Image (cartoon, rainbow over all chains, first blue to last red; front, side, top):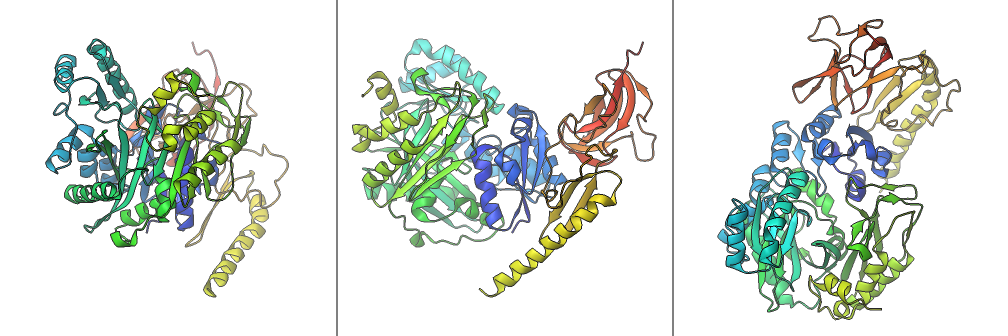
Length: 452
Length: 167
């Protein structure tokens, strides 16, 4: 096992990773920007290294600074968390070249699956159903528009290197295509340093379902069930739950099986997620692979009892999987709500500010992953995620009630600061959500016809 | 189950030892203590004193020094506040700081030297790349803060200048 792990991330996920390392007796080093020098992760780490200014390009996306920090502090592994460099094949290669273990799949797997264009190609080869779209990255706006016309609107323009719902634009009208194409391309360069984008058919009323896998370096792959992430705003998830409600057991089992088979074929190693959309008829279509830990991993942990970060470390250290497929028996229902510093009434725009009062919920089977506290400054430099509230209960009805209760308890206050707490509660009480008939269009529906 | 308390006892003893010695360590150097790093597993105690004259007249009580790492270096950390108007040249990146072009060569600058804006005052090596560190303002070097060959963090003070108009 590793002696020292450098955490190359910030916010709640830096803390999440650090805590499991601490539990396993592994020394932690937190690499941080000037904006995060007083963060809880820095405080709790055995050591910290200031790697750059607030701008992610020069700190959390700065591979040279992170590798230098790891070498300086004697780290033998780097945990990239999610976002930032977590799915950069180039970063994985640099780590490998410097004798550092990057906790995640090997660079060639990230290159193939983390890149959305080649992941689409791989999925087609592996026999996974894919949505109609362009083959390969769009050569330019004209060719891309032709692809869009061919597959039929609405379409989505996605950054090949992107993730987390960033740098992707849904286009409903051919007239909007050129502008959206240019904007997505710009965003892709800013966020991921890669201008490649591609075009794919977009399903307006679909369910977003994803399968969590664990794969070791010895050819064993297991899945840990599926998560429903259909409650989204601006293509970013707001509420996730497992198991996906109202989905036949056989469908979940089928998704698990095809995912495991594809992961084996890809030579996948580590924790990963295969994302699918289900159309109205229940047919599933592969959309992408996340070669990293997901934001919503806690709900899988709550129903399986498996610490995914621990498994990541064990796998990265070269050990075989401790669980066989038949050992993994998820029980009950878990729901996660993402509490963001944003204003639902203004299209969910982030609202930077200083948190003056912060009282997270407690209670039975209620887990709060957060780096926030009174005095924390929410800046525009980073994701507006303040906290993740995850609950568990034996049934869905109880889990929904518990999540609602937890959100009611949560107080986040600060001048200029808004949160989505009230909106999340509205979703939890919405009849479509209660009956589990909701799709990815739920939030848009709610915004156009508010229920009071 | 019985092995665990014994193991804990051992760790407690180590901690006790460090706490007992911290006070003495604090007075061992001419300057106040800057950092004590304790690594467990195979025990290592790393003690660092400030490079300058005491800024902190009150010695801190033992135990409060036992943080794993002090705050990341700010602009003024460890820099002689006694020189009024001193400007600090900080590390533009994380890496290893070198004072001279090559081992054995004379340093780029020494205390008392007058430097021009843009003049090279050091090197930061990061992943085998030698990056020049330049003075942004003209001035007379009044203090060398970072040790030659030491790892530095982003914005860690390297040296201090007293500004002058130059020409």
